Length: 406
View (cartoon, one colour):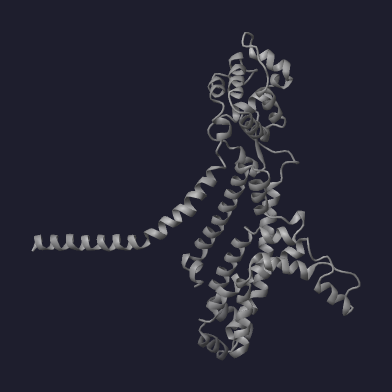
C-alpha cells in the first residue's frame, strides 16, 4: 500500500508538471513578445540614466592615472599626459561627444576638449605646462574634479540632475542653484495638473456614469455611444478640435459674443485652462466606463430596503449606494491619474510654455537636445511615480479592484 501510494503521488506530480508545462507553452509567445518589445527596451532605457560610456570608453589611460590622484592639488604630469593621449587618439566627433558630456557638469568643457584634440604637443616636453599655456583652464582644480568624477563606468549625474541636485566638492551632493533647479517644479506641475484633471473627471464623470447606468432605450444607447466616441478618434485629432473650438476666433468665443455674454474673446487656449478642458475630455471615458460597469451591478434591493426603513435620500446614497460603487470610483481615478501624468501631445498643442508636463521634457532631451541620459532619468522617475501610485492603490484597495473595479 505504501509503495502504491508513493507511485500515485509521483504520477500526480508528473501530471501536474505536464499541465504546468502545457500552460507555460501557451503563454510563452506572449511572454517572449513582452520581454523583447517591452522589458528589454525599458531596461536598456533605464540603464541609460546611469550609463557613462561616453567618457568611460574613451579615457582608459586618464582613468588609470587619476586612480593615484589625491584630489586635493592639481594632478601630476602623468594625468595631463594620459588625458592628452586619450583625447588625441580618438576621432574629432568622439572628442566632441566627450566634451558635450563633460559640459553637462562644467560649462566650457566642450570647447576645452575639442581644442585639446587639435593641440600640437611637443612629446619631448611635459604635457602639463603646454596644456595650461594653450588654455589656462587646464590649471583649474575644478576641471580635474569634473573629469575625475565623470570618468567611472556609471554616473549619478543624470539622476541627480533630474532631482535638481548635483555633485560638488568631490562627490558631495548639494542642491543645485536656483537657475538650474527646474525639474522639481515640473514634476510638481505634472502632479498638480493630473490631480485637477482627475478631480474634474470625478465631479463630471460620476453623474454621467449614473445616468448612463440607469438610462433605458434609445437615450441610453446614444449616451453610451457619445462616451465611446473619443476612443474612436485619435488624441491628436481631439486636441486639434479643441484648438479650433477654443481659440480667440473659434466657435465658442464667437457664439458667446453673438449672444452678448462677452464683449471680447476669452483666452481659453495656450494656457492652463485649455489644458484642463482638453485633458478632461480625453480622459473622462477612462473614469466613466469602469464606474459604469460597477453601477450596473449595484444591488437595488439594498437601496429600497434602506429607503423603506426611513433613511433619507442622502443617507441611502452614503450608506447603501456609495459603498457598492466606491471600487469603480477608485479604479476610474487611478486610471485617469496614471494616464494623465504621462500626457504629452495634448499639453503641447493646447498649453503654453508654463503648462508643459514632464513627458514634454523627456521628448525634448531625447529628440532635440539628444541628452539621452537625462531623458532616461526623467522617464525613470516618471515610471517610478506611476508604479508608486499603482502600489498605493493596490495596497489600499486590492489588486482585484485595479482590474475589475470590484
